Image (tube, helix red, strand yellow):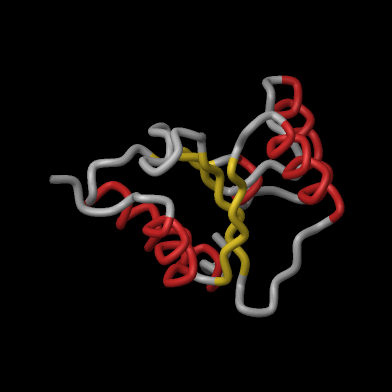
Length: 124
């Protein structure tokens, strides 16, 4: 099994923070490291695609809308040097056009700071 990347560690920290504060995060399949050789991984991804997986989908979505304005939020996790791909840029634009807030976060601290600015945090 492959080792976790810094992006995986950051996403795990954000998921933990959201759950600790009573929110329900949902991860996309895009970050899943599929086992097997290239041909096996390609077949598995084709199957996931048929089931609704979308190349370019953000890493996380949050079940509950943003407390400040009621829109739904998705988060694309990136490493400190990571960049948004063309497929991600396209999906993010489509989501924003339908009212979603799509955050691109460079690490856990950045994601949590942006989520807190939207009103997420410790519930009273």
